[in-house]
Length: 144
Image 1: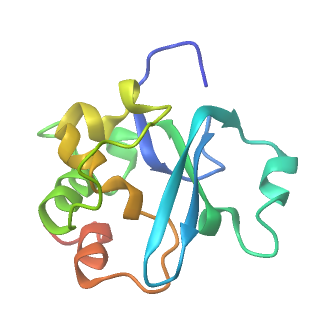
Image 2: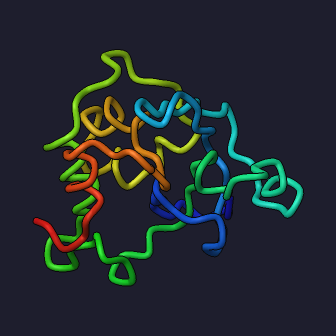
């Protein structure tokens, strides 16, 4: 991760500038679960190769500096992430006790929504082939 204290997006892609691996997705297609690393890891070709035969976004969660206005989920007028807002509003709580997270201190979702986002974050996956209606709505940047 860069040495600056940038606000990080916990729903980044592996090819974004300064992207870091912070979690591994497991569970089942119907119930994805995220396991958080104690420390972020740099994105390298070797790391991405560990995802094979699926894409890295199917098994890893990446964090990178928030793209703000360059992201369809960002509301520039309110300086907020609509994906975080909708996830908190629509998705069920999956943990009462907050999971350990290597990016929490700099995470946009934590800074914006607090513990409510963290209690739902483990079910958020970048590539979800069987999203619940709530997660499908939360992920759609065209839906308020």
